[in-house]
Image 1 (tube, rainbow, N blue to C red):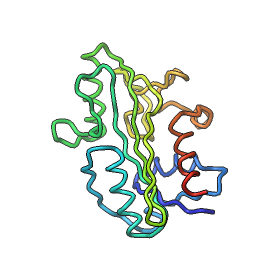
Image 2: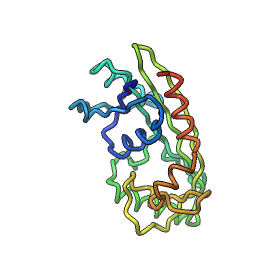
Image 3: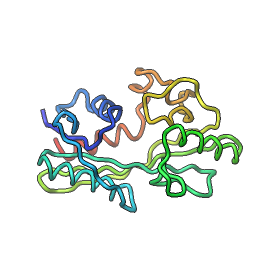
Image 4: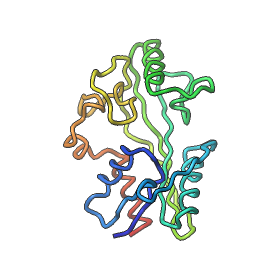
Length: 197
């Protein structure tokens, strides 16, 4: 098994990445597995710059091949894009509840729904060499009508609808997730394999 450290403290992201690489000879390990917690300042101007900062910090601390990611959000009907600052408005870091309320109110101003997508930068550092990939993820519908179901994800999945399945992202079953074969999952696994295998 080839070990790959995922530079995130987000348990859901770790779980999702482990699920993505299931069936390969790649083992995803978390900083928590190694009892490491680093505070990395994400002040880059692009998703790749922020991912690089995280990957480098954790790689330098462990010398284990490391992957990190950062994501920007683009909402088609919004004049002012969240971009890298999904949870930050006017310089203030918002709680998930505040973030949800902010987007619900902003979506109401543009008719209640908008197509949107995430743009993710991934960086892997292995043997002191950096590899990076940018992925424009599949479009989804952002809606001002919030699902009643709590989210185990990032919270915004309560106002995101997968248009192919016509379900809120927070309501997707494990089977839905496994079978939806989205662009990010496919490209992420291909990127990891191209570097590690």
